[in-house]
Length: 304
Image (cartoon, rainbow, N blue to C red; front, top):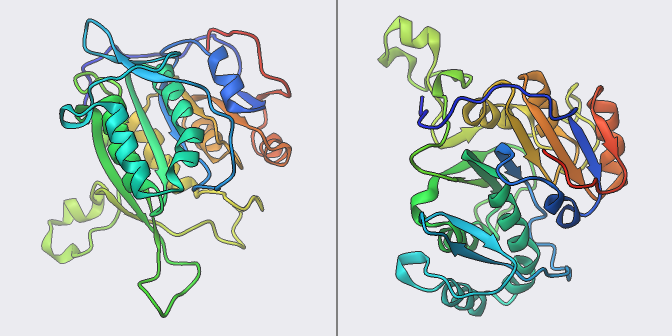
């Protein structure tokens, strides 16, 4: 268990909340450092134009990186400037500029909202994960990178002209490498692949998952299915929430979709704020998350 920061406990900052709205309008209303865990499952490069908010990352006197509302040149990946890294990557992929113009300001807001012992999980697929890794290093520093998780699954389209793509990538960054919370004891164990090579006690307990997670997609006929097209399985989110938050901690998901993050957080005794701009998603979450507060307009500035 990694625990160099303060132990958090539950508080009275209001009910669990679901907000209908553009997350770039909602996020600035939330207070700095409010969340121990931020999970993002954004669109996997839609190719659509999205409005851009001018943002940048700056270092303060303590060496911490924070978003700012002005564009500056900052030192990032291996001493290169952030603008240089970003510019070089955009020359490699002509789709990247529009997508990152959409995602980058939201990542900077997420970073601002993380507590000092907090963790950011960014869920992408093969189209953008490699670009995102380099740019997150430039924005937040390579020392904040914790893991690249590969979620491998067994359903979906099949290809005979290339290796079928059957995995997503989840990039994990911590706000402060010396203080982040990680509780390996709380994570659900999984069976050993070679149970005969370990002791009966270890076999009974199971092993801690590695950075490769074999987990099926949401079953089309299972009780977990909501009908929302991008729904992620609760088992994947449960590992994330168990490892990187404590009971009573606040969790944020601002591409909330079907509300899996909230359902898992609720079951594990965490608090949550979920944001989505799709009324259909909010209707799904209304049925799935009894007891949560539902806002149809961005809230006023809040302590959460």
